[in-house]
Image 1 (cartoon, protein in one colour):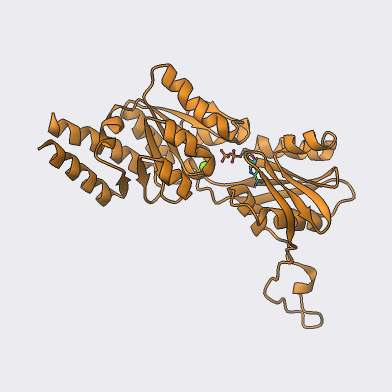
Image 2 (cartoon, rainbow, N blue to C red):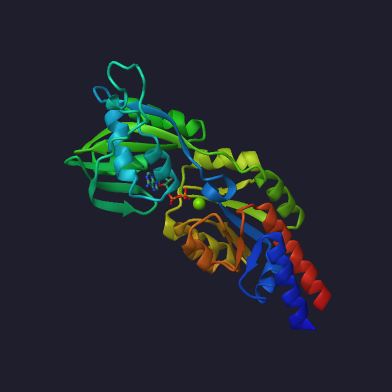
Amino acid sequence: ATPTALMVGTGRGAQLGILIKGPEVLESTRRVDTIVLDKTGTVTTGDMTVQSVVVAEGESEDDVCRLAAALESASEHPVARAIAAHVPASEDARRPGTGVSAAPRPQVPGVEGFTNREGLGVEGVVDGHAVVVGRPQLLADWSQPLPDALADAVDRAQAEGLTAVAVGWDGRARGVIAVGDTVKPTSAEAVRRLRELGLTPVLVTGDNERAARHVAAQVGIDDVVADVMPADKVAEVRRLQAAGKVVAMAGDGVNDAAALAQADLGLAMGTGTDVAIEASDLTLVRGDLLVAVDAIQLARRTLAVIR
Ligand code: ADP
Ligand code: MG
């Protein structure tokens, strides 16, 4: 009867929109007491959009956006997708004399020598310029400190809970693009119900501390670990396990895969990357954290029937 009950559990999971790797997963699902949540794409929608662009003195917003968009079109990161989509309507999209705008024809130049600096940003040659787009620290390391106007822009963006991305080329920082996304409509309720089930939520992100706190406050999470490099997400899971916790990890990104595999229970967003899904024990098909609550309840009920 035991295998039958487990199979019924996995079948019920499929109806709820949960793909379960195997019946044995239900046992770890039942025991978890801590849930590590990735921010972007897991607690938030991950559909980032550009909120503002600030350029250094003498620079053009069009150039900053165009070179950044060119470089980011080679990356799949949510920040990259926002910047790649934000190409200013080019001058020649307006048909002279007619007063009618043609369909926007973004003039995105090609990229050579593209390098993805995982968790930091991207680099490459665009239009003969060595371009860098990423965390402000990445540019500060690579050139001189950001000019005051850009440092202020970073500060303002982060104070609003946004992600500040610096853009530079040929050894100089030229602009700051602020991007942000929104919390999924079900995330706050999911966190509340996870707590009711006895789980402690922890928000872990590569993003800046203030953006992380902003999201944490909206969904009711107190424990925040920010500015985490991709390789350190797994270290965070290990640290909790070493403290005796049974850890679930929910994530969607390539940079979450190692942590998802290390966790006692890996929960992938079905809307996320294949790498994250492969590394996980459970997939929440629609990427809805409320379904993680269903999964834990299902596991507890199924195993209660068996015992
Ligand atoms: P997370 O997915 O947890 O937000 P990542 O480790 O992927 O974090 O990235 C950490 C930070 O590095 C991002 O918040 C962003 O500031 C920066 N970053 C990463 N990739 C890019 C990119 N392609 N373009 C610009 N910034 C990036
Ligand atoms: Mg993510």
